[in-house]
Amino acid sequence: MRTCLRAFFMSICIPLSVSLGLMLSSGTALAGPSLKAPLSDEELGGISGQAGIVLNAHLELSTGLGAENRISLGFKVGANTSYLLLDKLSGTLDLLGLSLRAVAGPAEVGDVIELTLPSFLGFKDFGVKAIGVQADPLAPLSNSLGQIQLNGSLQMQGQVLLWSR
Image (cartoon, rainbow, N blue to C red; front, side):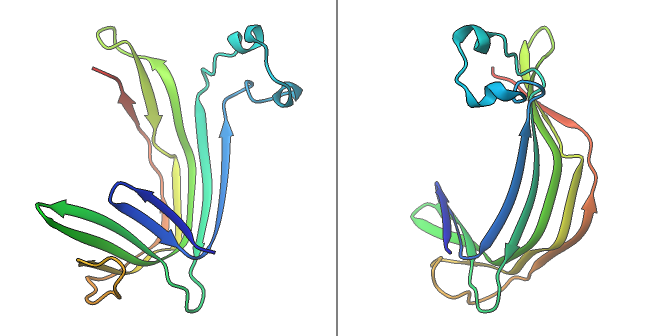
């Protein structure tokens, strides 16, 4: 299976099996049997969503024998485009407790969007086998700058507040 995502100069093409488990929860707004039936305007008006969204994910990337996958990021400077290549992405990533919600901010700013950092990140053999920079993103990697492989866990706390000007 070949999965490709493209955005601007970034393309991610991964021919591998991907297992991604996502769990979204926003308190009682998603609970109950009314989830299967359309909501009337009055019922929808009673839902506030103040608990926000919490994201938990388990991502497994496996290359298998002989499998090729590559992430390429294009950077255009003047008339030249160079690509950062991340070759053979694999491993397991666990993310717990990334949340997003609207909260009341300082008086001079008003309401803000609060992004809470995940409380746990776990890695098992997660990384890339080769990193390179070259002009052709589809050519074989000619010169590797090294590799990255992560094992272990990370616990974080904190938040980022976002608002418009």
